[in-house]
Length: 156
Image (cartoon, rainbow, N blue to C red; front, side):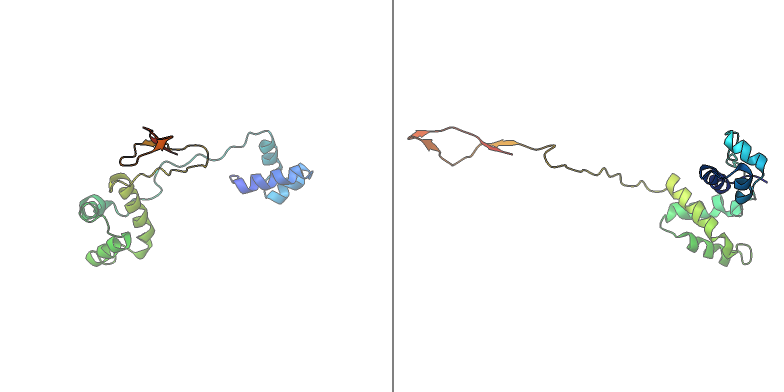
């Protein structure tokens, strides 16, 4: 039987509390030998599976029927597509395929669907940046001691 991460975590928690290897292994539901392997760091998680565990139930209709529908009307919901299949092929596509259909449609939309709008949030922190501007005031006359002052207004 393979070890899972919760068993390893529980075993290590017990060991850090000062409990013996034998008792920690018993509490975690593993063998003492597995406990030794964990402590020597010879334990590793099982690799991720990269193969299918069952035949694709939508294989017969995905490319020929569902993808053209999604291209034509991308707003179609996966449950609507499943209901359509159930109407067209009674008894062949059970309700238990709903989650499979949702995953397939989500993956298709991510890969081939409409582009999503990209947003980059702008957070302005006070005192870090500022804008400044010079403006010429037309029609405003400024005099100092009776002399005309040619100036620009500075705005921050």
